[in-house]
Every structure is written in C-alpha cells, then in structure tokens.
Image 1 (cartoon, rainbow, N blue to C red):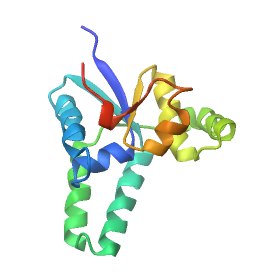
Image 2 (tube, rainbow, N blue to C red; image 1 turned 120 degrees about the vertical axis):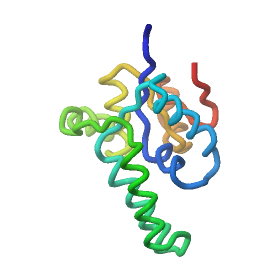
Image 3 (cartoon, helix red, strand yellow; image 1 turned 60 degrees about the vertical axis):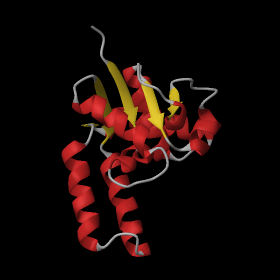
Image 4 (tube, helix red, strand yellow; image 1 turned 90 degrees about the vertical axis):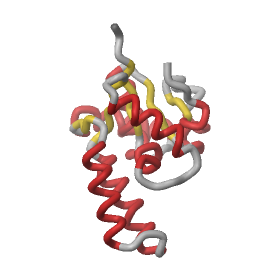
Length: 146
C-alpha cells in the first residue's frame, strides 16, 4: 500500500503546539503521522523556525519562558522526519532566485519536488505566489487527507 508523504513547513508545525487558526486541521495531519498512516518530512530548518516563533511569542508576552521551552520540547518529540538541507540547497536557491521568494520557503518546496510529494503550508502568501506554478503546494485550510 502506498503511504502518502508530505513536506510540512513551520507554519503548519507551529499549530501542533500553539492554538491558531486551522490548528485542528494541522493536528489531524500530525495524528495521521503519529498513527503511521502518512509520512511527514521537513528540512532541519523547521526546528529553527519553530523555535523562533516561540521566542517571538515569549517576547510579546503570549508565553512565559517555561511554556516556550515546554512547547519546543513537545515539538522536538513529535517532529517530522528531519532532512539535511544541503542536499537540496542549490535547488532551493534556484527556486528563490527564479520566483523572488525567500530561500527558507523554497527549501521546503525543493524538498517536496525532490521527494515528488506535496508541500503542506498554512502560509497563504507563499501559496498564492507559487501555488499555480507548483500544484504540489497545498494550503492547510483547504487540505483534506486521503
């Protein structure tokens, strides 16, 4: 049986540990991963991006330091399979230059193209900019599993 693989970006992963819009949808994706129904992958960059969001929320006063650390440890425990970005860095830079998008966004896309799978994002600006060119970019708020 074919297992569905998804690249998930930080905009989805952060919803696993912080309540935001579409958190329930993100949690269903994570649950499918935890139940071995799908594979989730992400460049190692996702760890830094999630940590940075937690830091920003702590600085803003939305979380205290202890809560930020707990959330981060929870993310690390439940993280997708992390991939070495060096493998697709050149392709990601090519995508960034060609489309005028940030390198880190294109790193997720480069992995999705490399793995021939969908990229799941909650970043509507990214989706709107490249979703027509790359139909494998899927927007979380419209995503349904299997």
